[in-house]
Image (cartoon, rainbow, N blue to C red; front, side, top):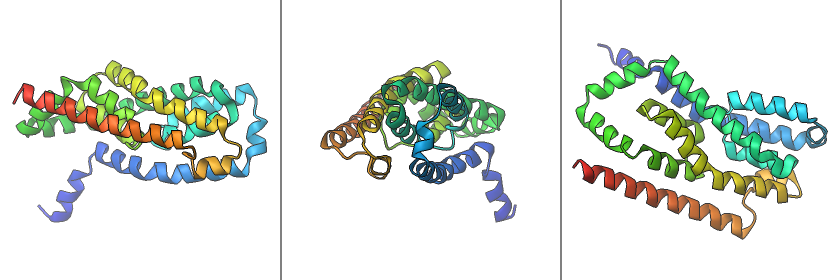
Length: 228
């Protein structure tokens, strides 16, 4: 088999989705930031129905386009605490959308790969025994990409109810923090260019990252020792 053919075979559906989920958020976040800064008066004039339509559209697109944190900052800036419901609708929509994509693409090929690699399958099974905890701590961290973590959990075979519950519990603290930061900001340009201006915001972000890392480490260690 030619090297080029071997490389092409590695580009399965989920692999291509993973690459897109790494590139698209960077591009779309830049576009969204520019639009929000340039059209602030227009956005402020939007009606409730317009915000509802935006929420529905982003619920279908947020899975691969933009991190929820930037949306929470923007929604919080324009809507205040009323942004809580739309943001969680968008987050859950992104999770569901990724699961549908994975099932539509070659999910079976990924599972077949695991079956051919007993060690990988064994490690995955151990982690899945603690999947709710793993999902919670992964979603707690503000630095782990939203789309890629959703893709990883969908590919692993984690139960959708655990992905939704763990995602809800893990993302709530950082979502509330982002909405609060948006609500307290006086200028959207300053908010989006430096979202963690306050010392308390920086402390909370650092704490969430540390708790996420420590939690994931402990869960994985317990899972590996249990069947080691």
